[in-house]
Length: 338
Image (cartoon, rainbow, N blue to C red; front, side):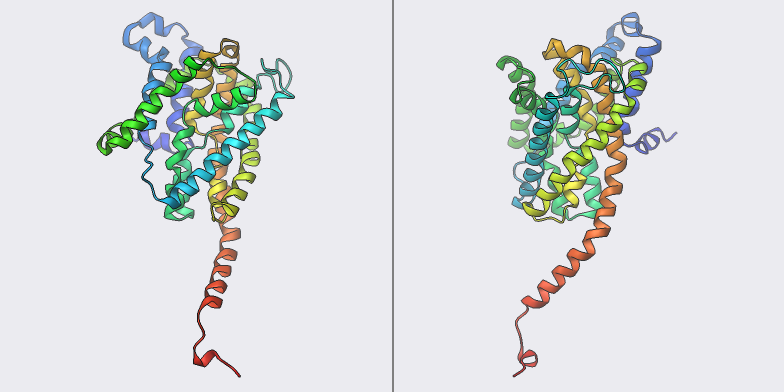
């Protein structure tokens, strides 16, 4: 059976398929974990320990010895995404209550859902798209995107905008595994390779555990807001990322558009933040469902939009480069006319 290949056909499937399976278990057999206990309960209810190991391994994958071009491109996209998510959070805080929308078409929509869906790029999707439509340096620009992984950036944004307050010890506890992994990965390449191999295999496990905290009815009711957030991520983050890629990173905008997605791993951030801020805990199921929907929407649309962008602008850029190269060539005797 080609189960893995079937899962890979689903955008973000490595995260979303186990998440949906976990939601089915929670909906139709909510007491399964306690009934079986032991290791089975650990898999069902072990979101935080599994995420802690995954976060550590993600830190180990960051290599600061990358080339200057890669760091410039990666840093530009990373900083732009963070700033846009910060601004979006500030704007949303003026219209959406801290405890979320309670009724109506957008019931369940919260600042938590908006922030966690916008501040983290799907690095795997970005790398795959840019390997097809970009340069080698652009494809390697996901090197710093791992910094967005986990709750670090979401916590900084929510804290800086005044939406939430994190005690220093809780903030340190959230980022310490990532920092330790980062240090070890840069001190020893073998350790970076070892822990790096664990990143993808852990995704289905915490996806399943996250799903066990979601009722399928919540996914159904959060569908439309999640789709709208997905479109919002592409538009709100995509435009600044395109401009930053063209004006600062020296690209043609394709890398910026390819980075305007929601990471599958971002689905875990509402639950982690909910563990630290009790008043956010009731928002976690709906926020998780919305971020998962946004991940699916952006995973489908971003590659299509990037391909259209490249077809539209690459010929123009190529023609311009040819003209610049031709005008830059020194004249020889045949080209001089008196």
